[in-house]
Length: 261
Image (cartoon, rainbow, N blue to C red; front, side, top):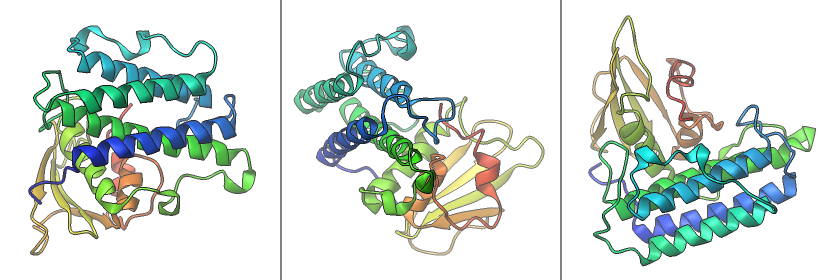
């Protein structure tokens, strides 16, 4: 699996669709509705977070030093929070579409693509995950639907799910501050999507090391395996539901230390 990245237009189109769905479902849920997948948040909190992230990304694309730009210090919505979210997403899309391929801008994940692609990819998955949060909030209004998202809720394809898994396992979890740890007994684990995408993780007391595996051939010897359809894995690894095959209980071990906050 040498290249799991989607092309730029797919990321931009995915960002546009996810932002629209998030805004629509947030409106339907109501700003005071709780967000079951983000305990303690209301829909207004969710919109404020996502809208600030859009504006934080815009600052990065303008060349700002991210060490000096705190997302939580950025201005939140003043008035119509849904319209404010839509405006930030539209501006972000315009800037990304107009940016040159050799844009100079900061990035912050391991093995990142070039800045223009990095930010399109990061914001695509950010908006996708939070659109699922807005859907969960809308459905929580009806006690029959107060549940975590499932693959049936996904509007995106397996290629998007695989790309989002890769961003988490390779980009986020290899950083010093993210990813699971094994304080006593280091181990290796394979995460395998039915699409053929696979990753080998070395988990110990320090940062996780993740290696993309070729799609053909048997799994390497590993202490644990997590597998299933790509969308199930995407939801589960991002703590948004899903039901992959997990005989070794990896999700329970990874849910807190692997959580991206």
